[in-house]
Every structure is written in C-alpha cells, then in structure tokens.
Image 1 (tube, rainbow, N blue to C red):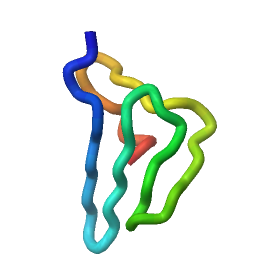
Image 2: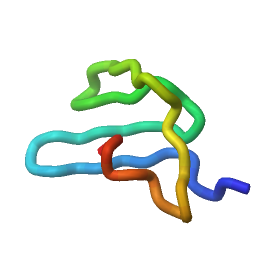
Image 3: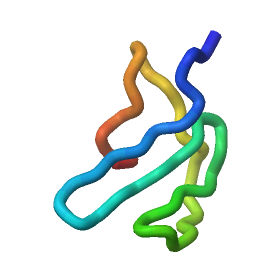
Length: 50
C-alpha cells in the first residue's frame, strides 16, 4: 500500500515533481521521461530521482 503518490523536491531554484508508478517527472515545469517509474522503497523515494 502506497500512502505517498506525489513527491516534490526543491533545491535552490530547481523543483522536481514526480508521481509514484509513473515514468514522467517535471523539473521546473519541463517534462522529463524517466527510464523506470518512480517507486517507494522503505517509505522513501530514492534520492537518485530528486
């Protein structure tokens, strides 16, 4: 069961948004296609996606 569906990470002026089980992310509003869907591991989204 996934409780968290969307993740938003901000560092400086960059913002990344991604949705669990989805291969599309957005960096500063621009669409990015991921190689694999984002997933939750041990309650966290791996930093490699942020």
